[in-house]
Length: 143
Image (cartoon, rainbow, N blue to C red; front, side, top):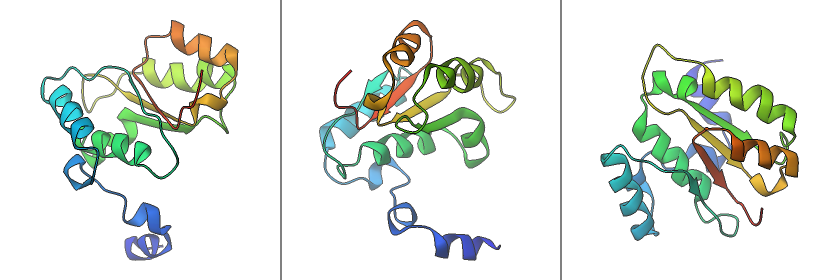
């Protein structure tokens, strides 16, 4: 399959998802704050919340694409849908091993994006609290 065929088969929301923070519309104060954190290299743990379709996942993915080159992206960013991968086994296995492995591309924090983190089990949430992972959670309603 060629690159052109792959882009033809992408869902519309993925094909036209903003790739940089400046491509996002609305939420100017939030984007300005995130840009300032990134400029100072002091990106804290973030929790994005709100109704579906308001740009939570797009915002953090645009942030990640701005922080890392396309070659670095896969080794520095882990995106999980926490409603599918929600048990303590995922935290102890996939998340902690991703966070603890070194990469040859770039020093600095790796990003772990948990979409729908409110679906995680209580044990998994507690394990994440004890870990030292840099976490970004989208579509979180309550913990």
